[in-house]
Length: 151
View (spheres, one colour):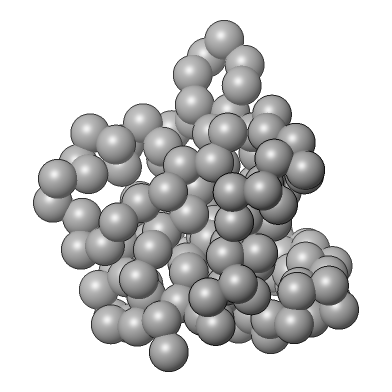
């Protein structure tokens, strides 16, 4: 089964990327994998604190995932899987794609503020010619109705 890979992070535009991935998966008989990356800690010499922070980050990610997963199951009939990684987001996302040949499309949400679409969209766009799968960039301000029309 082909899967859509979508990134779960703390951005507003993540919501539209989740919606798009779930609706496309539902309409095409595909699956959804949600990846969330915990960035490396800056203060590694405080190992006890770093471990607590990582555990809190995992709990927060799992709680957010459950909200999205419930919506995907109840409204779209899609049962997503979660992959939590630790490291540099770009590296970890590319690694997930490389290790799972069923991932057919990477779905990212584009930010709408003056600073640009976001670091992941910017980095991956620059390297889009060498990505192992197509990438869909979903505008952060796109309405639910418009998303439903195009999926």
